[in-house]
Amino acid sequence: MPSKNFHTRLVRAAVTAMLSAIGVVTVLMFRIAMPPPIWFLEYDIADVPVLIISMIYGPLYGLPSLAIVSFLQAFLTPNGNQLWGFVMHFVSSALLVVIVGIFHIHFKKWKFTFAGMAIGVVSVVITMIFMNLIVTVRFLNTPMHVVIDLMPYIVPFNFGKPLLNCIITAMLYRALTPFIQKNTSLLGIK
Image (spheres, rainbow, N blue to C red):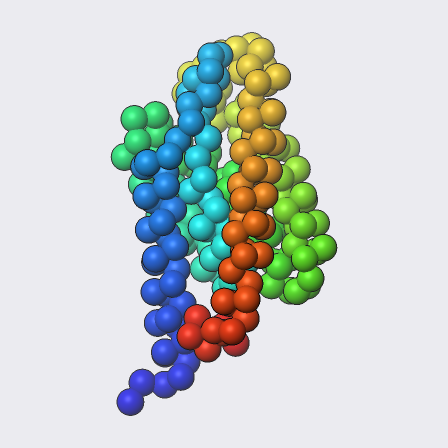
């Protein structure tokens, strides 16, 4: 007979897989291309289900989900930019997933979750400035001056995308909170 711990892990894996699948579907079906000169960037809501996973179970469940969603986005979408698109998406979103997950799981109050979201968004912006200066210049062979000239467009994008995803996540999670609280054993929440 399987142990309760095995059952909990199985339920968590199933919920994580379902929300990850929603993330993949959203990235394949719903993307908004940015206008020139940042046509290579796209807004999507794939991080929303991943953030929900991290808020329910913590970053140790959110990060593998993010890896799957980021990988499939990088290699299945026309503008996914393959390896470097995966790296850039994973690094930027991982910061958000970890910070929001930790704040929500450990502090249990919405004011701390919102603080985690704010810190996460700022962390994404700062990290992506450096990632663009390093990865885009070194590995995508874009001249440094071009990347610097695009920063007035890239920085607002890197602020707006995680901010909007955090707002959508907060609204969805707040709506799901009564269900989550009533079904903790069903969802494998301790």
